Amino acid sequence: MFINASLIVQMIVFLLLVGFTMKFVWPPIVKALDERAEKIREGLSAADKAKAELKGAEAQIAKELAATKAESGKLIGDAEKRAAAIVEEAKKKAEEEGAKIVAAAKADAEQQVGRAREALREQVAALAVKGAEQILQREVNAGVHAELLSRLKTEL
Image (tube, rainbow, N blue to C red; front, top):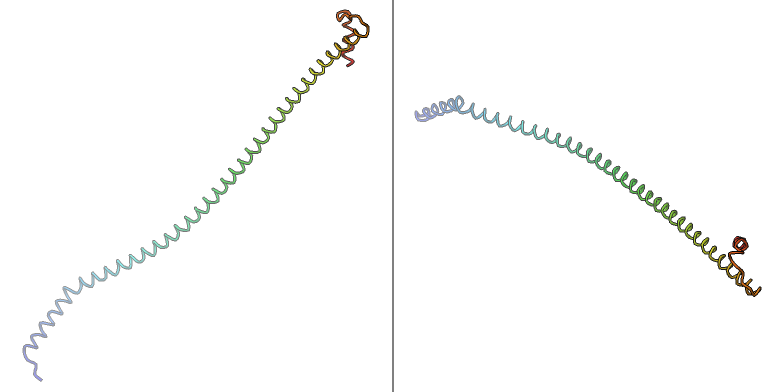
């Protein structure tokens, strides 16, 4: 087995190429790969951190949403109570106004009854005088007998 000179020259060139590559080409490639791996690790850790923050934010949002719902429920309940109180107050005022109207109507009716009774008394007194005139066949003087007619009115 003879190794010829071209094979030896090729081996020397190959070894020089490997040496050159190991000294000048390989370190920047390894450095770039290490930097890339570090960036990937940083990106993954940032993604994990962002996920954790997102979960925390979602939990905070859920808490705030629950608090807001509770507060709005309370406000709605208060508004319903206030509306019911306003309705009750309006009912009371309406009942009071109705009672005043009924009382005024009763007083007016009593006044009208009193006036009607007075008018009826006067009419009865006049009829009594006319009846007495006819019975006595003479005219009774109302001015002379005013006291008698007053007593008659009060008795009726």
